[in-house]
Structures are given as structure tokens and as C-alpha cells.
Amino acid sequence: MGALDKARAGAQRWPEEGWSLISTGASAALIGFISTFFIVLQGLYNVGASPHQAVTALAVLCLFQGIMGLVFSLATRKPYTFAWSTPGAAILLSYNQPLSGFEEAVGAFCMAGGLMLGMALVPRLSRYLEKIPVSLSSAMLAGVLLSLAKSFVPAFEQYPLIVGMVALVWLLLFIVKPLFSLPVSLCVMLAYFLIKQPLGHAVEVSDYRFEWVVPVFTLSSFINLSIPLFVVTLFSQNIPGYLIMRNNGYATHFPGTLFVTGLATSCASLLGCHGLNLAALTAAMCAGPLASSDKSLRYIASCAAGVSYLLMALFAAGLVSLLAVIPSPVILALAALAMFSTLADALRDALKQDLYYPAVATLMVTVYFPNFFHVSSSFWGLVLGTLFYLAYSKKKLG
Image (tube, rainbow, N blue to C red; front, side, top):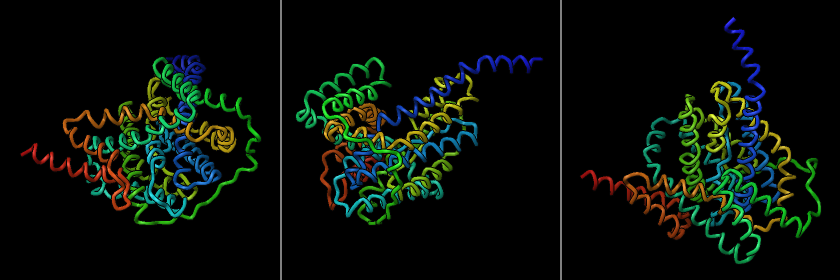
């Protein structure tokens, strides 16, 4: 009789619990998409992708995120959520090294996935790479984001009215309702340009098709792009996502998730995708009490997020067509605002430990160091910052 009473109580509570789980999962996916998809698009454009290739990559990213989230969540009954690498997209956006074409960038994406696979398969390599302090990788990411943030000023000079309006809306909502600041700012921006310049036509779903890209592998792209992508994705996405799951009481096999995300990245790169990883923000929403007070039901929120990503994959072409009326400088300005929280978190993680001098050195090298020997400053920031860290640690211990 006690079990029957519990079942009845659960059935009575299900409409409210079910709505909370489904709405939380769908909202997590929508916020994850709207807040950063333009960073992914602009980053892909910056490394040579055509509009059609960028749309293909965006749709495939959503497709993989949806499938992986559904399969993992249903198989384990744990709220696994996956996302594209937003810090990786920021690196693409600030990348200024010569490439032979998008094919070379795709080769770098594939090699970055291979590095993640190596991290999962080689325990000794995993132990060595995990010794790189989080403060240094965070400082490198902060340097990349600071370089990106400089795009706000020229955009404001070129489009003062709309950029100023969007910045004001974003600031007010960021203070009051942070989760709505970017989606509402994007809607304001889109409405402004649609009124000013209506759409000529929308891309129909029937016109959309996947476009394969044959990768080109070079040492230059491996050093300049693959390694920075791998490092920031590992330290800024996969590890935080793992810790969020652990903090909410879900045991996860970290090497296994690295293997899956690395394999998925290498496979999806053939369609132009730059990186897949464990989610952080959406994981916090789906795995936390916001989804449900019952920890055993929270996987349903991740399933709802997965279904939402599958729908976004279907309509990716139309979404990109809708947003094509917005000039690139204005999107970059909003991208700079979108990276504000990520930049703040990166700076906090870089400076919260005792050895903050090496972190500051990494940050300064990443921001100000020239592209020496055609190698990007983000790589030099990590290398020189690590050397500074080793020397400083030895002196401090001595």
C-alpha cells in the first residue's frame, strides 16, 4: 500500500515536474544556441568557410549534440548534455594566420579531436596534460577573448545607434535577468535590421543539404589551431562540465566522455564542425535543482534539450538566413558582449590561485605578443606562461 501511495503521489506531481523538466531542458538548449551561434558562424567565416559550409557545420553541431545527449541520458539515466566549443569558436574568430582554405581549418579541427582521443586513450599523456595549471589555460582564453572584445569599439563607431541600443539593453538585462540579456539583445538587433532592410527571401529547408569537406593536414595548422582548440576545449568546457556533473551527485567516467567527444569532433569535422564537448551552462541547468527536486528524473531535462537541438538542426538554414541581414561588425559587437561572462570567469580562474604571476604573463603574451614564426600568440602565451610557471614554482619551492 505504501508503494501504491508513492506511485499515486508521483503521478499527481508529474504534470508539474514534467513541465519543469521539459521547459528547463528546452530553455537550456535555446539559450545555448541563441547566445553563441553567431560566434560559431563568424569564427567559421573567419577561417574560410562559405555561408553554406557554415550552415552545414552549425546544423551538424546541433545534430551531434542532440543525438549524444539523448543516447547518453537514456542509457545512463543521468543528465548528460553536450555543446559546441564556444571558447574554441572564439579562437577561430580571432585567428589571423594564413590558411590555404577551409580544408586546412577542417584538418586542424580533426586533429584537435584526435588530441582529445589521445588524452582519453593514453593515461600517461592524460596525467601530463592535467598538470598544466587551469590558471594558465584560463589566462590564455582570457587573452583571446580580450582580443575579441576590441571589436566592440570599431562596431560602435560604424553603427553607433544600434550598437549603443543593444549594449544598453544587454547591460540592463544582464543586471536584472542575466539569462535573457543575450536573447533579447539579439531580438532587438534583428528587429532593427529587419525593419530597416526586410528579407528578400528565406532559405527553405528543401534547399539545405550536408556538404562534406576534405581535410588538409599541415604542421602549421596543428600548432596554430589544433593545440589551442584542444587546450581551451579541455580546460574551459570538458573539465567544468565534468565537475558540474560531479557536484550535482552524478558519477561520470571522464576518460570515456573525452573519448566520445574527441571521436565526435573528428567525425563531425568532415562536415566543418570545430569542436564538441561536455556542456557547462546547459549542464548546470539540466543537472541541477532548477530542473527537478528529484535527482533521478533530471535526465529527462537533458533528453528535452537533445530533442530541441535536433529541431534546431532541421531549421538551421532558415535561422542563418534570417540573421543574414545583420552586418558582421554588429554581430561581432554582440559577440564581444556574449563573451563578457566567459571573459570574467576566465580572469577569475586565472587569478584565483597563488601562482597568479605566471597567469598574468600568459595573458600578456597572448594579447600583445606578435605571431612569431607564423605561430599564433595563444600558443606562445601557453608555452611561455608554462615556462614562467615552472621557473617561478621552482624558485618559490627553493
